[in-house]
Image (cartoon, rainbow, N blue to C red; front, side, top):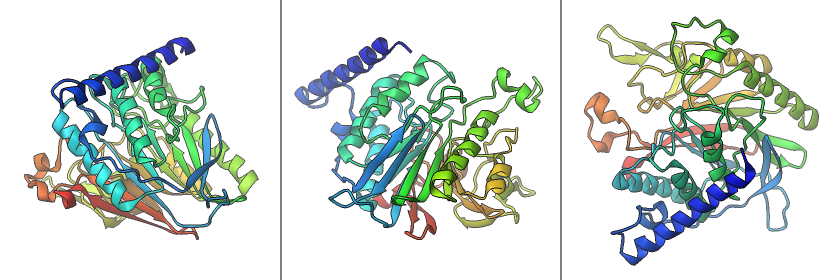
Length: 385
């Protein structure tokens, strides 16, 4: 993308937001688009996390003291997905307000969004506004794209949408290598000492619908249409990155974050004789429920086989399926749905008829102990009704 155009477009969008805020203040909300930071009680949470190093495809962070010394302390990740921030001011305000409640209450060290976040008519404006919101909160955050953010995989719109957010200091997302599928294939290292990693977080662009140009890669017939899958280039990058990390830090343990769940999530789910979704006996279910089919690709990319081959990745976090919120353990690997946080999408009410006091929107908290052990648990928006 032309760098001059890119900077002009982003600066123009920022100026439009500034004018919008002025109108909002001057008219007490009558004029100007309803802004996240004007309609939500934003709290400066802050962080003791520091960026140690960074490059085009990775960021290394650590908790530090006031002198910059790395601390071997527990680390908390708040993940959520499918905010579907669209064009309904009331629902957008509700969604962001709930997210702020959870961040304020849990004080995470890192917030991770697993796709389908900014979906309104003015995506670039809203992407900048969301990044400004996170800057006010003062917590580091990262994201991957979902299947709704952009209708292209390697083009100007998606690249600009990414750069609208990655230009902000607290956003850890990276574009990743040019030769990989999509945008935002990168990893985040969390250090526990100068020479030891607590966890590495691999982030993947899982695409949207299968593209004809990739059918030959997995011998997919032209008549099959389905959600996308991780490409061989992405899996090769994962293996190469693990090898490079081991050369520098030794054996590392890791998590994965993506939007569309890998095929193995389906092993946890079946339908009974009445067509009701339920769990199988192939997985250990730690929490949550299943209320729709797993929206994985019809094609198994083979990523799970790589996970087992290398023994590094302990958990996979995804989004996409708004009313599935289980955490299952399959063959020793956690398969986790980050809790859906949005209201401008289908909800559990449409699937079950439940009232809002039973809805499952929320966030997922992952607590990592200094020794590397971790715990995953849901936190629901309904507690703030």
